[in-house]
Length: 316
Image 1 (cartoon, rainbow, N blue to C red):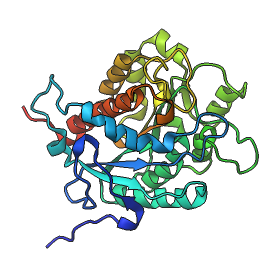
Image 2 (image 1 turned 90 degrees about the vertical axis):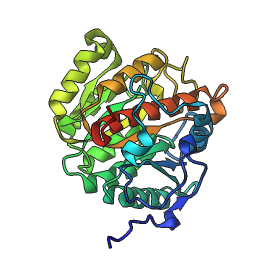
Image 3 (image 1 turned 180 degrees about the horizontal axis):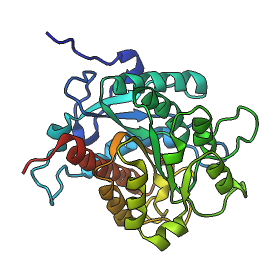
C-alpha cells in the first residue's frame, strides 16, 4: 500500500477554507493546494496589515460562486483535487524564523508534486516561497504582475523589504532571470534607476506604458514564446490592479488595470507550466467593504480555472 503524504502539522494552522473547502493535511490526490502566509514584516514605510490578508480573502470567498459559466462542467475541486492547507505558522517580528518556516512548509507541498496557491502576506514572503519551489523545479522562471518590480537595490547591506524580494532571488539564483518577466510597473518610485537595476539583474521588464501600447495579446504572446515549457512561478501583487478596484494594498499606485483586464490576462496564461501561484498584499485594515479581498479571491479562482484546464483537464 502506498504511503500517505501528510503535511507536518507543526507548520500549519487550520482555518476556515477558501470557498468552504475543508482543511486537509493530506496531499494524496491534491494537484493544487491553497495556503495562507500571514506575515508582513517586509513593509518598511507604507501600510501595514497584509498579515490579515489570508483570513480576509477566505472570509469574502463566501460571496464567490464556484463554476465558470463558459465551462459549467469544469469543477476545480475535482479537476485539481483541491484542498486548503490552512495558514503557515509564523512569528510576528521574527523574520528569519518565519521565513524558514514558510520555506519548509512550501517545500512539503511542492515536494509532493502539488501546486501551492498562496495568499499573502506582503511581497517579502514571495522570497522564501520561491526558494522552496525552485528546489523542486529546475529552471524556474518568474512571471510577476505588479505596479513595482520589487527588484530594488537594498537600502543597506543585508536589508530585506518588499522592494528587495526579487533582487535577492536573482542573487541566489532562484530564477532563470533571462526568461523571467516583471510586467506592469508604473508610477513614481523611490529610486530613480530601479528599472535599470531590475534589468541589470537579468530580468525582462515590460512597464505598464509599454504593456498598454503593445496590447495584452502581444505581451502574453512574447511571454509564452520566451518561457516555453519552463516551470513558472506566477506572482500576482494586488497593486497591479488600479486602487479604484483594489484600494487595500500595501503600496497603492494609480493608473493600473481594471478587474476585467486582470481576468483577461490570467485567462491568456493557459498552457504555461505554472507550478506555483502567489497572490499577495491584501491589507484588510485599508479595505472598503472587503472589495479588495473579494477581488483577490476572484483572482485566485481565475488562476485555479487556468490550472484546472492546463494540468487538471476539463470535462466535455
